[in-house]
Image (cartoon, rainbow, N blue to C red; front, side, top):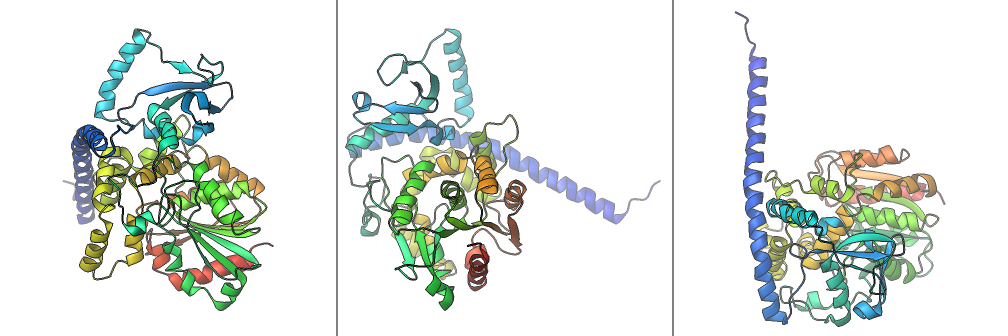
Length: 473
């Protein structure tokens, strides 16, 4: 008889427990998310009725709307003419992520049977060009909700929707996308040597920087640099337009108009966190000679395997439809369920004053108040479209951006990541370095997605000052 060591038994028992836990997570996930599929389907009709009752019109959504084929003679653009929509504009189709209207679920899998039957019967979609006739050129599949939102740009009102907060703080920012973003500035306002642009992450605001780093910069840095922290479109105190699709182009254009042009920025450094890293890369590529350094905190970069559809792959990485860990459950609900996530926003964002008070009271101020306020300062429309069009929709673009940063942007690239980050895996930062070899990766142990900044304010402020002073002029 062969003796079995205690260590071998312990390893076997550990493997068995891990396997059971994995199986349990998989089984529960199938049950829970199939149930959530049905709940979201039901909520679709609930909100259709509620929107009609409160706003006297049906509101388009992505779960029920069919796809329309819209063509153009241009290789990658569509012109929505004044004759068709009473609005002359060009829509960059690649800016709209297909994850908005293609999210596989129990119901969508069943609906594929009907789609296949229609194709078997050779039922063709209605194809419209800018003249109203069949167009010659590329054909794009576009969800009808996108078209409906373009139509709404004409008659959209300035008041928030019934499911959004109408308090003074939330309505102080105009709901027109033509307005400027809210920017907090610190340092010399006239002729600063260089500017530093701070871009926050998802469900956050400029206070993520102004309440942590701005008070900790040295007197020398305050006299040398002008610090500009921006609230992204739809977040914080910036406008929350109901007619916006919150695409990458819209976000970048608003930053350029509200910050770079308004403050006459010539030479600048960028410090970005999480989702903000994607916008930072896009800005660096557009202004290669102006960017002096890139500091990226927890960049959400997932290399796309060959043969995978980029946006769908990123969505599965960010939101894998699992009930454990809790952060994954939360991200999955936010990403996969349009109406459940709207319900969450209705409960917490519309009543943010109550939840802010309750959070601070229960945690005894252990959670910074500015983090709580920043988390609630958005609308469902802004969060939903930004999540899909920026995080998921840019999956196929980041490779190109990183290649351009490597080849065309002559600046320092520094990447900082918390070793305990359970929102964006540390591997993402090493993926960036693999694409941009000169990038420096610093993994800070015992820090997570948020404490990478708020847990080391003075130390991080000194690190940034050193990065800027060492940047090539």
